[in-house]
Image (tube, rainbow, N blue to C red; front, side, top):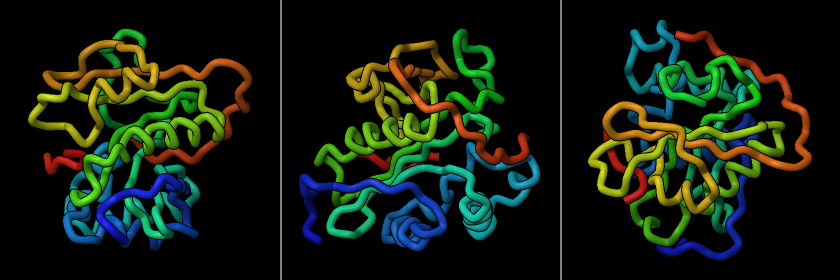
Length: 213
């Protein structure tokens, strides 16, 4: 595949049938196989073992159990991007209780969007905003009433994997407040008719390679 994106991207959730694609994207050169998008998901027990194998197996166990974890972008049948989005109760972190209006950590009607990954050779083609739109559509189709995210300002030196504030603002997100020194809590509420939230399995509760620039 050439180092550019076609107009006809497709998007699919990560589930048992697409696990191999997810694995291939994460284990490709420069992929985030050091974390497997587990830091916000890990239980206290899982956090005691921080090696790559444990993190990969933790993600695999969730997918095998049918827990929503996120979506993949495809170009020409190849996985070219990832967005982590799932019900809030599946994320023990981040801790947002001090932010007015932030979702209750046990509220399955709100989904959290925590991470994007686009291979370096494909950055600058506008894939992240397309992943965001597809992720919002996916969450709404699954019955979410709202999506919460934790982006940073464009000049932030860290946490950029969570996306940049202007991208969320362009998608209609409203600001709820700061989360630490760099992150912000933003929320997109879905209006109009929406399916009822589906029950989804939750897990027990319990750095900074840039995936976008």
